[in-house]
Length: 388
Image (cartoon, helix red, strand yellow):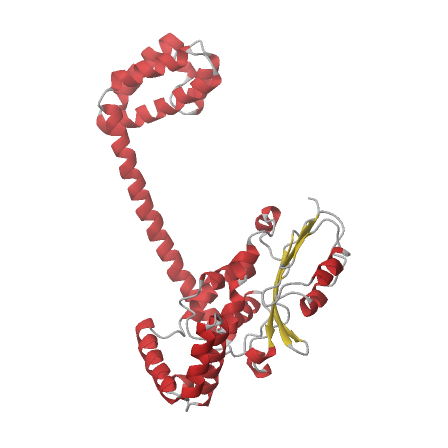
């Protein structure tokens, strides 16, 4: 297998300047470079630049995929979005890490040495950026679920000690966004572990009603001057900036509120999650078995309906098989084999196998010298050479 590496970077908050585009072009004559992106793939050699340095200087998001079963997502966010303590409980050895510059956080999610060889044998890296980039906006709004998924990927990879306590599960783990679902797929988070983590999520209806009441309380005490400033941002086309500022203030207010009953719940350990995942796996397998059984019943019903249509005119079916056999070509013989298999089942369902065997004997009296056809029917279990 030849080497394959895919690099994609995008600038979101500010476009690249002509000078910056020229700096990047000096690293590659083949890359697709625009004021908002750098995309290149390598079948030999490697990127001459340092992705971490490029994230510090130029870009807000980066996706890397290599066919040795490795992939990386990196997002750059302004430091004002999170305080440093937020990340402490989520960081793992390699799957989720955090670096910082003077002005930004650099968040990195990584999958190293996956055992899903089939995935990386065909994956070209294209498409992941479009699916994962929305995570940045979610983080800017204060959504911590992508951080938790990074930690859970570390648990899946065996990087987190069994006795370690999980981070405080963010609300909404049972209702992941499309981008968060893509992150689960990208990092190959164990689905049964995810199901275990979701158990910490309160029922949607209760969460929504409580959240609405809490939000109303916060809005009621928000100074009028601040409300007017946010409305000004909305009217002047800065809706994202207004949302970001409001969300950050709301989260800061939430942290200052007295603890509620749910915070007194014992923090689950990794061992607890693994036990819950084992139970979730059993439930999943039972559900999958039921789904397979249901699908098989539906398939069998459709099959019987089709066979009864054949039984409505057996003679027509035999005439069609005769015409196909007379063509004397491989594809026609394949069609004859399939049609006779269906006919045999239709006879068993609506007549008798003996009736089919008698009709097949007459058919073979006409076509028994067609060696390729005879071989197919013998292999299908419809005919025995000794019966001639």
